[in-house]
Image 1 (cartoon, rainbow, N blue to C red):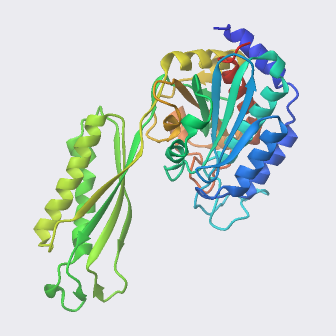
Image 2: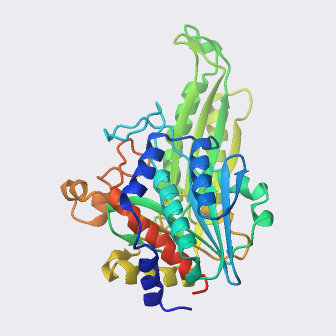
Image 3: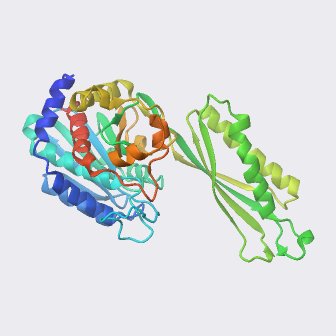
Amino acid sequence: MTEPAAVARLALDLTSGLKSGELEDFYRDLHRHPELSFKEHRTADRLARRLRAAGYTVTDGVAGTGVVGVLANGDGPVVWLRGDMDALPVQEATGLDYASAVDGVMHACGHDLHVTWLVGAAEALAAARETWSGTLVVVGQPAEESGGGAGAMVADGLHERFPRPDVLLGQHVAPGLAGFYSHTPGLIMSASDDVDIVVHGVGGHGSRPESTVDPVVTAAYVVTRLQTVVSREIAAKDPAVLTVGMFHAGTKRNIIPAEARLALNLRTQDPVVRERILAAVRRIAEGECAAAGCPRPPGVTVRAGYPNTVNDAALDAEIAAVHRELFGEATVFDFGPAMGSEDFSLLAPPGVPYDYWFVTSTPADVWETAPGEDLAAKIAEVPGNHSPLFAPDPSVLVPGVRTLVSAALSRLGI
């Protein structure tokens, strides 16, 4: 393994010519034109054009809108760099002069930054290919937000159609004073499951409730009872979150509907805890429906989403050491596992190590005026991912390219 200091020096040399203004123009353009999951046609086209111009062999249309660029540069390891491309159904409220021009759609999770970082790193490494050997594979992934993008790329032959990686690398923008890099060996992000519940009632006129079985009331009891699962059935040491995100029922004020629908999201870090919560969800839904006299048991459907994201500890330590050399010892820290979830790990073929880290991006003035005395308290107060006010500081554009470049160089032949 090449010494971290040597990797950092080479990364700085390769990125010394980065033009922050050009990167920012590209980033602003992506931010103005966000696209939802599996609809990232314009974004994918921008990425593919830049990769082709840099000398990559590009395959687009992977899983619909995915992009894969391959740069074979002699014998050596195969390194995959991943960036996700999709935006969210959020109405932007930042007031930025480059705010979203698409009504109700926003890059509220920073995937526009991810694509910009990916382009910058791909171009820098291609321009300096005489300094390294191996194969670089750049993956522009669709639909991370909907949970289907990585799996769809794999189903479309990602692992068979392109050089098998020796490592998979990725990063994500996050709230926190701009200029820090969170590395966590092992478990870094949680598993996520979606659960749909259908409560079957007996509909009728609102003036004659005694002739009905009201699914709205029953579903409301289900929602209330579900609040006790994590607080009363799961040990305090086991992180878990259960959220009822949707409650749909009825069409008119004076009609008692025949059914009500609930949509839940579950975050866990332990498979045993996951199964315990899913069993409790089924038990509560069935119990409340039985108590209400529903004509048949509820429908409970579990839709598996994201697995746990578990970094290879040795790989993470190696890349964290390079980032310390690049940016300073105090800039790299371990924030611990997050309850957020990702489908990043699905891109790695079985047995291939991967590493995933965070780049903090909150502007200094926003951070300094946020209430709170410690890191966790301040992070809770500044606009974060999925907020209509999420506005990363463009000052992280060049450093974010350098984190990817240096991480790739740590495993390519140099």
